[in-house]
Image (cartoon, rainbow, N blue to C red; front, side):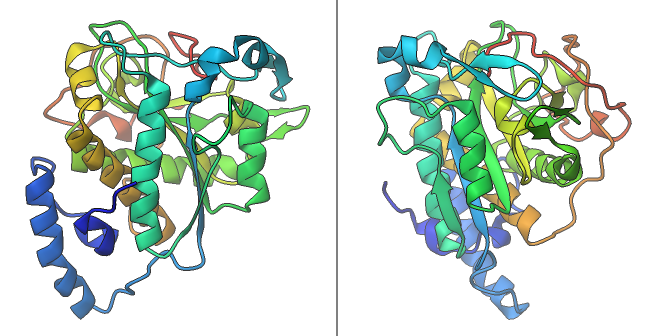
Length: 311
């Protein structure tokens, strides 16, 4: 993984950067901001002593091990496939390749912040791991935050990104009650930072324009004992989203958005207060020019995914 000039700069110093900046502008702006942050006494390693688990969704090798990933595993309130292949763009760029590349980019940034970073898989396994093992990796690491990286495969006319929060699930090995609150804080903070840096709108096809969903069917959330969320970084079936997700320069911005959200959560910077989330009914209410409106008042409901794809 290549290191960028941004990797040596405190992620915290980039929080106020406007979303319209391109990669070159972002590097110049962050570089000029770092001395100002140092002057205000911010630690150069704000995440020292913190552990972050990044979970790149799926695995490029899953396509060659369909029987293995189809085995059913217990997610507490039901049984689901161990894993899936994920989705892809119309041009064939696979979600599994996107998530692994993004995870490696985020890792560079978080390591520069002083964090310990664990990946659930780094292209070093022939397939998987199963969703149950992914959750256990975060638990065993006693992670301060777990972020599962995905891209959606919704209808082509839908666009934008969303963050998935754990529902309250008490069933079998699952008991999410201790993590629902901190996971919501992580999710809202991640949502806001990602939108600020990338300019990607909240999903138009679910979440009521809030950019948030609450789900009770994901093993990675149900079985987690530490704060955990999923981020669907865009819709791979939408032409505009697919073009962004496929571009390395845009993936660098996405990595900054994810790293900013994690850093802001772990350094306890103020985040948007939200008693949100969502309905699974597509609403088409997101406005690409206004990412902050609807999340303040929408009631919380448990949801199921329109596509049923993410596992």
